[in-house]
Amino acid sequence: MPDTPRRDRDDDGRPRNARPRDALGRPLPPGSQGVPQLPEDLNLSPDETLALAQQLLDDGRAFSAHEVFEAAWKSGPDDERSLWQGLAQLAVGITHIQRGNPTGGQSLLRRSAKRLSEAEPRYGIDVAELIGFAGALADDLAAGAEIPAARLRPLLQR
Image (cartoon, rainbow, N blue to C red; front, side, top):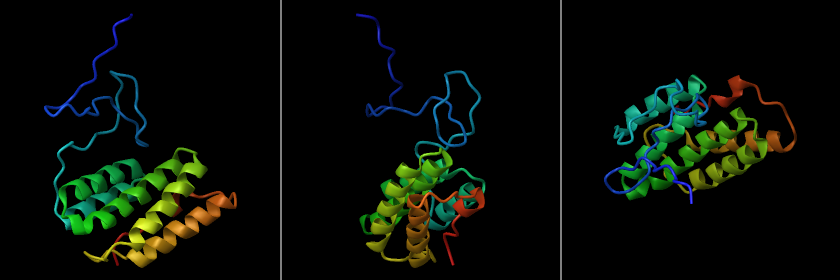
């Protein structure tokens, strides 16, 4: 049996994301020049999380925004989990659209709207607006509409 390359793992045995990635989060061949990656142990305040994620979304880097939201849900209090997960799903839905996968985009955007509807608004996040944004974008994808890049930059806070 041929040797299988060992995956890079942290001290707890979880795989690390050591491969470089492009701006849409797709893995590149080892040794390639990718976009800067976020640290695996990212731990920001809610305001810092929102500011960084907004900048990444505005820059067209929804996959990286997803990673910021994922770090917030993993490190934040349990009662905020639906909020951060819903925002992460929103960013992944946008990522699918950017990658040319409208079916995946629709699915994640609808999951995002559902998860956000379970969340308590905090930190000036306009949850109702984001639910409407996700639903309208999913509906347009289902109808086969072309989605311009400028439409993939939701405003997170009022």
